[in-house]
Structures are given as structure tokens and as C-alpha cells.
Image (cartoon, rainbow, N blue to C red; front, side, top):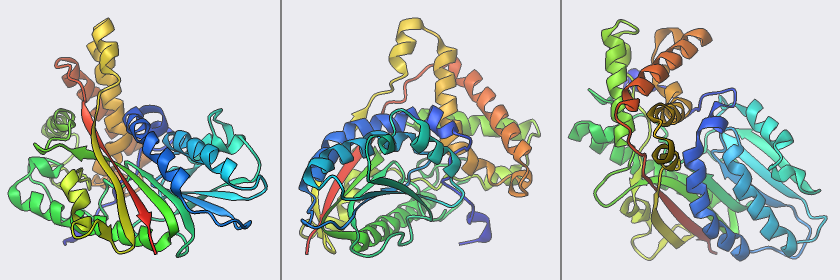
Length: 360
């Protein structure tokens, strides 16, 4: 592992940008709600007055966490005394935009925190590749689209920034890191879960052919980055270090730790499903035919989720120049819209949901 590959990653664009433009993860959450409901009905609850803990691993700016937390609380409340406290811990990296998270929790009309007494939202600024809550304390763990981010970048990817467009050596390095990280993530969550607790993880996935549905979007962005280097907007050396620490897994990769007897440590596999996730922006395009509007939605999604990781290699951004960051983002967005508007294509992706129970 060289110093060049140890870059900040996985932090969304701030000032609420992710809340505004990351609609696709919200669609994945909607497909997982039925499994969350079932998990909430199955979690073990003692009859006392000890507080209940729900952990939201990888909350980002909070908007996509509101529906699942609302549903979890609505199923939970009839099962416990009205005065029993419920703590909801939103967990993300220290550099996350927690200001937007707190604003959503306080002001959004859909906020679960406004629905009743004895519900206490909290935030923890720490990577979920660390233990973030006490052992045997969590009743429900929820993670949506966050565990696709790896703990580190294991390899540079000449010619691209995603492993599936790289050489075999880069793909193998990412696959190995993804295997290690998934088992480590599960180990930490198993430690934090109470006996009888449930963990629900929602992830972007790859189908049996190895496709994610994001290939076209990523290829457009990659071409734009090449254009920007060619036009002297940043250096080729900075471009070479641009890598996304993401790895959408296939179902077989998610299930690998449970191969022997359906268990990993004290976690028992209850459900795992891969489902298609259609592009919600595509029907609008089919109705009005406005390719620029479609391209804008796709470009803003890319910008809000992936741009900060790519920009982290730029010298001025690394030095803390916020204006340089916004200028890079604006130029990237503008060029992506121009390219994609000429070739309108839906982002039809895949979502995986895995439900685990802690036994013993």
C-alpha cells in the first residue's frame, strides 16, 4: 500500500447536496422496507425499561434515513412501554456534513424525531470500520448504500477510476479488499448487536453477469476527466491517483462468509435478495424527451456522491481550497451534462438486501 493510494474517500458533497440529489439510494431503501419491517417484528425485546438502540451505519446527511427510521419506530412502539426511551444513532465519518443531518432531523416534516416523545436522535463521527457502540447494545442495525465503500483503496486503476474497468490485477486487489472489509464489517456489527437483534444491510450490487448498471455513467465521467486533463484543468499525475474506493458485490460475495452453515460468528443469515432498481428519472424523459434534464439529474447524482473522492487528489483541494473544489465540481458537472445529453441512457441498477440475526 503506497502513500498515493491512501486517499480520503466516501464523503458525500456537503451543504445538503447529497440530500437533494441522491435519489437513487432512496429507491433502493424503498425496495428493502418490507425486510426491515419483518426484522423489526422479530427483534428480541426484554420486558424492562432499558432503552432501545437503533444504529444507522453510514447515515450521510440523513434524508434517506428518515423513511426506514420512521417505519422501525412505528413497529417498535406498540411492543414497548410509551415511556421507554429509544436512541437512534446516526453514524458516519468525522468529515460528514452533520450540519445537514441535524437540520433534517430538526426541521424536515418527515423526520421521525418529530413524531413522539422519548425518541432521541444522536450522531457519531466515526468510520463503521471501527467499533462505534458498546458490545451487546444494538437492537437494530441498519445500513443503506454505505458498505459499498471500502476501508481503503488497495490499488490505483490506470485508465479509469472503478475496478471493473481496470486490469485484472486491480480487480483482484479490490475483490480481496472487499472480502476482508465485508467480514470485518460483519465482525464489528456482530459484536455490537444484542442477542436477538437484527442487522439489515442494503447495497448496490452486481448481477450474475457482473454488471452494476452504473457502467455508462462511470465511463462518461472517466472520459470527461480525460478531457479536463487534456485541456490543462488539472495535472495527469492528479488524474492517475483518482480512484473510487467502492466495490458493488455480487450476491455470492455477500453470502461467502455464511457458506458453511448459514452463520458467520453469531450472525445467522435470514434473507438475501438481489432486485433490479429502475431509473426513476427515465419515465420523465420518456414523457417530455428533455435529454438535458435527464443528464442533469444523472450528473448531479454523480457529483453529490462521487465527486469529493475524485477531487481529493487535487493539490489545491488537499490544501483546503474550497473554491477549487467547487470549481472542479462545476466544470465536471457541466461537461458530463453535455456528453450525456447527446446519449440519453437510463441508470437501471441493482439493489441487494441482506438480513442477519444475532443468535446466542
